[in-house]
Image 1 (cartoon, rainbow, N blue to C red):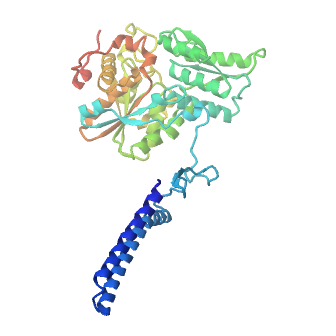
Image 2 (image 1 turned 135 degrees about the horizontal axis):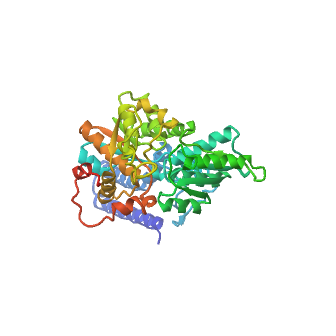
Length: 462
């Protein structure tokens, strides 16, 4: 027996009981005068009417409520399951209903559509240790090459296409001298947009970077580290290779030198992308922006965007040992003590940190140099201890340049005092630094009693 039949039987039984009671009352009141009998009849009729009204409204009310709520826009169950006349559950076919009122989703086109809009998150351990909000822009989550160089590589390619210097699927090859991240981004985007990639890099960089470049279809040329005045230096070598291809009539396509150190497209990628994102994600509330500089594009582009909106913002350069940029900001000269004759152990920058630090002036860095308020020096031991700290305390596994940024962010926060908000950049994953930086930083495990003071007080080993 279904629900509707049960309700009907219940109502019939209720009416039968009421009728019998009424008839019984008539028998026992037959001796009364007519007026008294009529009065009892009216009372009984009113009672019966009340019962019927109650039973009817009980069945009608849920339907009235649903109609009212639908009309008022509170619910819309027109497409859901319902009981039919036989009391069976039926489903309605909604394929012919009008399209949803939801906005059209924005779906990225190609891997280049996955670049930018990276998360900004609070590093819990560093924020607790300093009393400041230390926020990290997760640039390692860019969708092409997994670093902020994705923005730069895409910007360079797009600008070259607009100027007619590159034509997709024509055999054109993009050449660049890079220590790894820019090359990885270029190799990825070259394949996505119909170009070939030729990367020149120092042969003392982590092997996993060159191995990854090969897997991405790039041609990799590892050269010995050398001064920028040497024509065999990796950047100069890339420029030469691009000119050779363009001049060779027997080889298809043209050679294009990306020139990340001097290209305006570099800092503009951060002026139009990273800077606005940081401003929006913080709601315009930040006291300092801290970043290292390799080409200088990130710190220049972000500083140019943020400073015009937040004049009181402090822009701080994070610089590894062996780099001359610290003194460029502090004293206006490009010099580092390790540059003294006979003391330098390497041909580029005397540090295990890769991706930031340089000993020459570049156009991308100079574009925003006047907006940089101060510089913080970070030694290799501090960088290694910070990298371990981030894994041990937060589960964040990043590379050497990110560790440098975080040390400088903590130093800046400590100097500014509790209650401030400091934003920095996490550039790439630690997986690109296994054979060099993390080989020296060591494995992480066991109980950790390191304090933030231990990290900041770490001294460089001789």
